[in-house]
Structures are given as structure tokens and as C-alpha cells.
Length: 104
Image (spheres, rainbow, N blue to C red):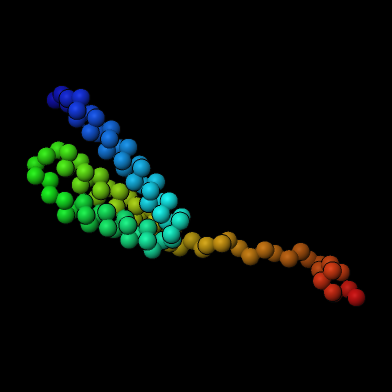
């Protein structure tokens, strides 16, 4: 089975858009938080199912890429749901120094 050069172009475009979409979801998560990023991912996934393909491979590619970005974006956001923001509080050194008023 031979794939024409236009098919290879569509495959390469789909891969580039998939990577760019996942980076976009990660940037939204970093900038706005987990909730909007999760909503964006689920929204893309749902819209991917609502696009009428009309038996055209370009539309199949568009809907498939939107589904993949939504699915993998949601997994990307869910993997980070359990992590705390801000890290651990700073630890004070022991023993306390004179500046803290302990050895007056």
C-alpha cells in the first residue's frame, strides 16, 4: 500500500499539531491553574466528536487530533492534580540564633 505525499503531509501536520496542543494545555495549566486546563482538554475532546467528518481525511485528521489532544491533555492535568503548589515551607535552623531572642 502506497501513501501519497499529501497523506504524509497530513500525518506530519497531525503530529505537529498534537505536540503543540499538549504544550498549549500545559501552558494553560501553568498560567491559569488545573481547572481551566482540565476544562479546555475535556472541551477539545468533546468538540472532536462533534465535528462532522463528511468522509474527508482532512476532517478525520482534525477531529482525531482534537480527540487526542483532549484525552492526553486531560491525563496530563490529572497526573498533576495531587501535587501541592508552592512546595514545602522553609525550615528554621536549629539551634535558634541570638537574633531570634532565645539567648538573652
